[in-house]
Image (cartoon, rainbow, N blue to C red; front, side, top):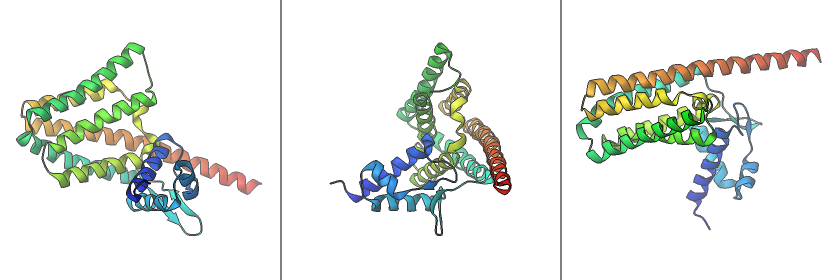
Length: 245
């Protein structure tokens, strides 16, 4: 029998995947019973996992209705990105003071992974990323950014940035920009940041990293506003039809 902690973690990972795959969308009701059946576990660890997602602000509980996927405000995404700018900008300047040759090599490896993906896409003339491509890109991006944070040796900073990145991704999953993103552009930005770190140029590394995150913020917020407008329009049309019939 799996420990209760592992079952809760399994439930959280399953719910996370449901969000990322689009099985759960903004405003959707989250069925505790259905998720438990899908995983093949009792409802208790699922209930605990849902509680954590509610505390994170991804879900919300409605009286006499149950748990639903919360629809975020564009302002929330903006604020999360601005926190990232502040934390990661500080982190890269600190990381340069302490980063080891091994950590520099690992950062370069993440850049190489992204370059290999870009080469593959160009070779296949792919205009849109497959789910596998998106996973590869996400992990390379994740490992690059958190690799910088780890180099500071500051565990609390690592936890705060990790939590921020996860919440940003969960809240904006519906408008993930990795599907049609320019891998070449992201790789070029990461490479420039890496070279500044390698050269021990703290001010330049900080400037490049902050600009990189702010560009991501602009794209994500623009997309999320469009998506929210489309949802509002769809809802108003539905209400109009309800009044007619």
